[in-house]
Length: 380
Ligand SMILES: Cc1cc2nc3c(=O)[nH]c(=O)nc-3n(C[C@H](O)[C@H](O)[C@H](O)COP(=O)(O)O)c2cc1C
Image (cartoon, rainbow, N blue to C red; front, top):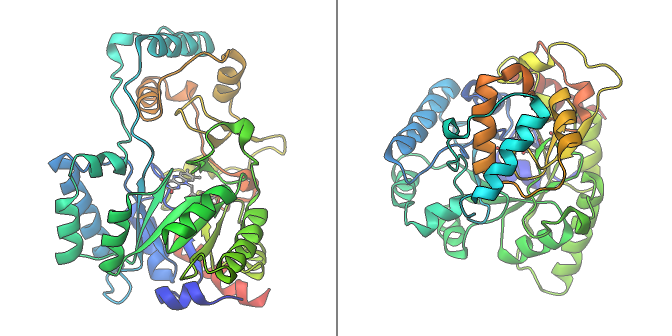
């Protein structure tokens, strides 16, 4: 079993509590951290070009440190950003199509004038383009340096990567295919989060954008191929260092964790497994067991990017009504959906979760679950 990840990050367990936008709470992250895992805070909802959002970020970190209340552990945190290509505003045609789709599938009137088609998920690339990272970098240098900063949907510029690494921060990026893994390894990324197709939430793909050309590799296959590829790259002298390989997707219990470690993954990132924990914003949705007929689907017409979600009535209606029309881009469409959801919460049940959702444990604190999983890894 590889201990590189634990050693390099001084963790009790080779576990990362996955960043889960909208679901992870500060308490959840603090408990994961105190229990001996790497905590994560999702920051994709913040626009660092706006002073108020940057203040919110600082307040989140301060609350996290207070909750952890242990200076030797508080740096075991991963700050997570979305790093997709910068997308254009939606066209009138895309907005009209979206309104018609929602009216048809939900059978409700949509007043387009009341929907704000503003980008709700501004990419880290926009912060780089608009030179909006000065305060953030200063904060990392003067106030608080996390051990890891991670990116989903792509990677930042070489200069940002080198800057953060020079300041002793490890950069983690999600890969969903070997093409992406290879590129990230050559770029000098410190930890590559190998996300299999079974994973819950948004798929972090950034090179293969057409699902027809996507091999949709499982977590186990991606990890096995990644480990083999690294050995080849090292032999050929293509990488001067060896990135950490983190497995994510469908890992629900200690046996799953042990299996990934036996395949030479350095660590695992758990998302769905933690959805039912008391501190999760989604815990209510997982308080009762699902029927054995419940399923998940990979769906790209809610947010604009593929995401694995439980097949609720809302998703069923949307999928049967959708005729392939052009819809607004990610960020804009997701934000519009969230506005409809606020008015019609019972009609718009969008529950991001992975294939392992049937075995989510509820009524358990995050620190208890991490400790239980961590302790039983060694026994397997
Ligand atoms: C509800 C939910 C929200 C997520 N949000 C994020 C996010 O903000 N950033 C990120 O890098 N990954 C996010 N993910 C993906 C996780 O990091 C991870 O890849 C995934 O949960 C692994 O699969 P699993 O859910 O089967 O454990 C999310 C996953 C879920 C289930």
